[in-house]
Amino acid sequence: MLANRDTFCVEILNYQIMKAHTHNLSNMKIKTFILTVLVLLSGSACKAQYNQYNSFMRKALVIYKCGPDGYYHATKNVTLDEVKDVETQYAYNKKTQNLYVLTPNSNCDIRLLKDEELETAIEEQNRILEQKFKRLNDQRTRHIEDSIAKAKRDSIERARQDSIERVREAEKLQTYRTTHDWRRVPVKGARLKCEICDETTTNMDSLYCLGINNDSIMYFEWKEGKLYNEYLEWHISSLPMELKTNPSFKYHFEAYRDSLTNTEVSSNTARRLCALSFYRYLDNLRKDAPYGFFEDWGWSSEYSMVTFLFSYTNMNKSTIKYIAVHFKITNDVGDVRKTGYFQGTGPVEEYDTGSWEWDSSPYFVSGDASTMEFTKVVITYTNGKQEVLSKNQIMYN
Image (cartoon, rainbow, N blue to C red; front, side, top):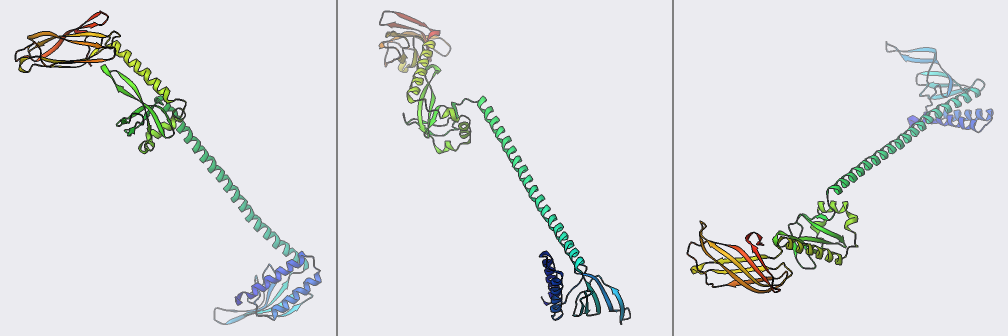
């Protein structure tokens, strides 16, 4: 810290000189102040330093330097760029403003700056400082502008990427909507238990949905009916967690949220739709089997006696009074072993099913009898009408 006293003292001197000029003090006051500081410096242990910034000229009246022979040799009147490590300031000429000092190896004459020179030096130093901090401020301004520009570019790029992603997602959703039916909701085998009928739906890849509301899903299920025809049943089930978290279900719900959450469809609507579906189912049954169809039938020839049973569903509006099933029994090579008929007595109304069974009969066959087939069915209705169904008209479920 002591080694830097001289520099510190000179810096104080320079600062005070500049401050004095800034406040427009008189030359006499400036000179008096300089002299005071110099006296203080001369009486202190500071080692002042002089250079082009605080003095006009620096000259060694005599300076000693070590020569190649190892001896110190004196040189007089040598101009110096810098005088440092001043040990003693022993004289000051007020008139010429010359300061005389001793260093460890020289006796120097230093001409301090005069009033005009001092003012010029101060202005020069101010200019240097102004340029220095202008450069720093310019650098700061460029840094801020570059940062703002980069932030804008980054923000624009992020917005562009987000916009591209949104467009891609929108296009993906639109493509999905054009290739899927909003009512056909993927469930991927989720277990759904109906709150109406307690029936459990499992192992279905998708179902026909009527709507989703309050964490419940209302859906239709196609039930297999008679003669390979189908009809709708409706169910309501709570959405299980395995379905809520299923990616396919979530994406479908996102694509068709508005349609799926439309709560205007009520349970009464669902009932009407199911009823309509069932009526269509019955119409298809009537088209396929206008007089009815065999729900079940069977025969045997144990102990050579023919036994027989059958169930028949009436699809005609007229009530069945009698139904006679004519049969033919053959062996494996087509030889006829027995013919005959079994007649069941009704009544069997429209859509009802009648069942009959014969544990014994007047028909006996040989042991090689193996096959029974129907040759015709004669249906007599309560209104007196009669229909004879040929072999090709007989329908089986």
